[in-house]
Structure formats: structure tokens, C-alpha cells
Length: 287
Image 1: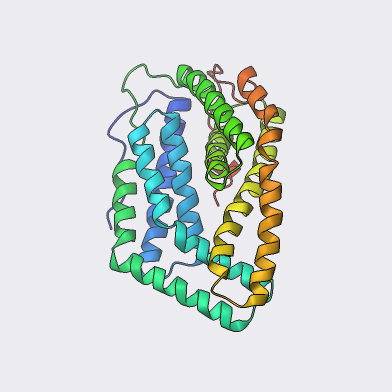
Image 2: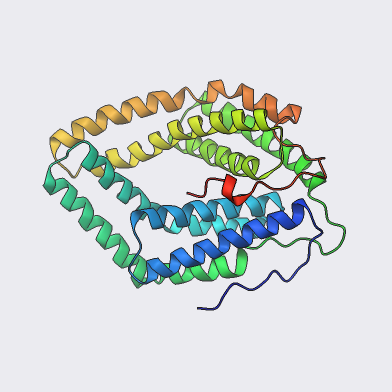
């Protein structure tokens, strides 16, 4: 397979060039993982890594105001959502020591899903999307991300405020899921951008905790639905775990005022720091 082309645009040195280089690194990683998947060597961790890297690319593209390209990355992630969820479901069943017959049934569902992905050439489509759309397009001369960061910070604040309000009014699964995705984007962008170290690390830690609660509820909602086809004992455990996850997730929205305050105050990112550089990829959790 051909190597990824170099970006067709140029960017001034500093944060802008760091963003392009980060996107290129993520692009290269996804293409390598996709080759493994197409060769039948894709493990559950491979699928998870593909999705995570594409989400990071989506967040980078949104940072650069490349909305169309970001939407392509979002659709790319969704192509593998069910397979990933089924793989996590299998892990859950093994953890709770479900009957072997139930685990075997889920493994059959996973195999069926993998067959469909291969039949529809999904991995090839993901490869082409990442090849063509992963790298941000920046203005060739005089472009600076600094004003964009200020705009984006306020956009995050407004969107998050609306999502929190809706979730507090009616904490439906779809609303909590939308909140989780918004938090994930803020987290990824915060990881890359220069900021005050202590404040940034505290924000990241707290966002990850909230993500975990919302993610658990999203998982358990799927598991509960699929579990209706399994052993009654498993169904009872699923119902209990789902209720616990739902209860915890519904409490999340009422406790996010601290993040709105941080965004409003501009204490999350130092957008005006011309000496700041993107976090090293070694410092960013890739999986």
C-alpha cells in the first residue's frame, strides 16, 4: 500500500505545524492498523485503537475548523461501533463468568459482524477516508490557530451548556451520549494544546472520570438489550448493572459546572501563548 502523502499545504512553524504533524502521525497509525484488520489480524484492541485514533483525528480537524473532514472521521468511527460494542460485551460476560453457551453465542455475533464488514469492504472504505480526509487544511500563509482557539472555547462552552441543560431536564440515553461525545472532543483537544500544567491535568482527570460513567451507561444499555437473548441468570445481572450505570450517569450533568467555569475563564487552554507547542505524542495517551 502507498505511504501517506505529505500535506499539500504549508503551515507556519509552531502550534499550527504541530497540529499537522500530529494528524499525520495518527493517520499513519490508523492506516497501519487497518492493514492488520484487512489481513484478518485485527484483535479487539486493534478495533478499539482504530476508533480512538479516528476520534482524535476528528477532534484535531474540528480544532482547525475543518468541519466536513471531521464529519468524515465521525462516520468512520461509527462503522465499527457495533463490532467494538460486541467485543466489549464478550469481555463483560467473561468477567461475570457467564455460561459458556452465552459467550459462544456472542462470539458468533462477532463473527457475523466481522463477515459483514469484510463483505461490504468497510475496512477499505475506512482506509480511503483516512487517506484522503485525515490531514487538516490550513491557510498557506499567515494562518494562526490562536483566534480559532478563542472561538472554539466559546463554542464548547455554549454547546456544553445546552447539552447539560437538556440532560438535566430529561436524562435520556441519547442526550447523555451526546454529552459524552462533546466531553471527549474537549478532552482530546485539551491534551494537545498548551495550557497551565496543573489546571490542565486536573481538568483531564475529571473529564475522564465523567466519560467513564457515561460510557459505562452507554455500554450497559446495549448489553441489556442483547442480553435478552441469553441466559436468565445473565439477564438478572445485566439488569442490575444497567440500573446502577444509569443512576450514576444521570447524576453527571448536574456536576459539570466546574468545566463550564473553566471554559468561560479560559483557564483550560493558553491560546495566546505563541511559544506553546502541541503536547508530544509520547505524552498523549494513544489508546
